Amino acid sequence: MGRDDESRLGHGFLPDVCPRLSHGAAQAVHFICHSARWEECSGAGAAAAGTFGTSACSGRQETGGRVTARRWKSKAGTRAGASCALLLLAACSGRQSALDPAGEDAETLALMFTVMVTAAAILWLCLNGLFFYVTRVSPRRMSRKLANGLVIGGGILMPLVLIGALLAWGLSILPDHDQPGDGLVIRVQGEQWWWRVAYETPEGDVISANEIRMPVGERVSFVLDSHRVIHSFWIPSLGGKMDMFPGRQTNLSLRADEAGIYRGQCAEFCGASHAWMAFEVEAMEPDAFDAWLAAEAAPAGPPDGGAEAIGRQIFAREGCGGCHEIRGTEFQGQVGPDLTHVGSRHSLGAGRLGARLEDFSTWIAHTDDLKPGVEMPPFDHLPQEELTALAAYLKGLQ
Ligand code: CUA
Image (tube, protein in one colour):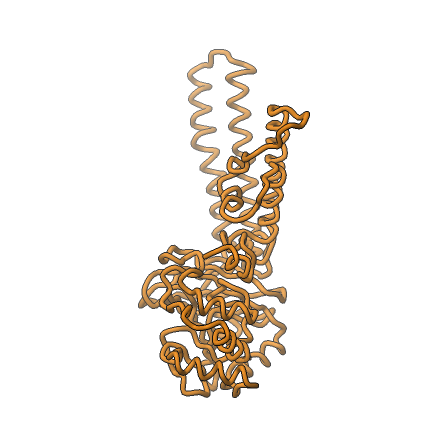
């Protein structure tokens, strides 16, 4: 995949390299690289800076100035250190952060994290303070009785009481993933590497894929399983993760308290494109959700306009309907994601690209570059005008 292709990717390159980097974190990586006067801050190097620390940013320095190499290194070191701190802080917010909760369970987990980290930090400071005191401040011989007391008291009793108390408190507030919801049941099945989604309604299942919408303020029951390998369903902004197993059903109960679009991610290694297995979650006001679900249940409308009609013909000619279903048409495939309303989704390829018209043609022509190992072959033999017509048809499936 060339640079032109990369620049066309919907979400920008940095978050694509590491989907767990929030936008803020990506900006911080950018800042780190500029702090170290890297001439070009993009691509894998910047991602490496974010992943492996600032060592990767010790690239080139300006020559010929009055700043000596040593002073430059010192300045760059200070800046890089400050930038690393900024990077850590920036990762605390965003639409895929467990530390930026937008739901009841995520708030509980964020509180647990804060309390546990604070307690661990206090314990660490106390033990190191004690160590510093006995080795540097007052390095005198100690009676056996005092030494035994320190080992038993500080090494066994204190951790037992402190960690025991934290464990008991943590278990007492841990969200119950099996608790009953307020009525809505969404079944999600993990595929390699996308998500099959079904909303249970009295009139029957409403089938969708790679995106979840849910009403704000209502607890939703997710029923999870998998087709071939183990995946893990995780929406960090809304709650904890839950594994998805082939042949076994697991449950997760989540409530969103703030309307917005969040990002979910598979959290269990499931093959070559595990990192590209994401999805969008839109928490909507209940009335808007009901209207959306009614529209999602309806079959696809006919093509609107010449390009869309040509795109539909190409869809049929290339056999796309053998894998994909578009309800209300002759296309009934069940292998790949349902496309009945694919034009209304926020992303393509399970969070891989945005959902602009050009993203559709990029995805269709470059599936194997964008998602290594994916079952859908790349349709790069199609001329650009046919790709554009296909994109118009699919984008028109609102
Ligand atoms: Cu699915 Cu990792």
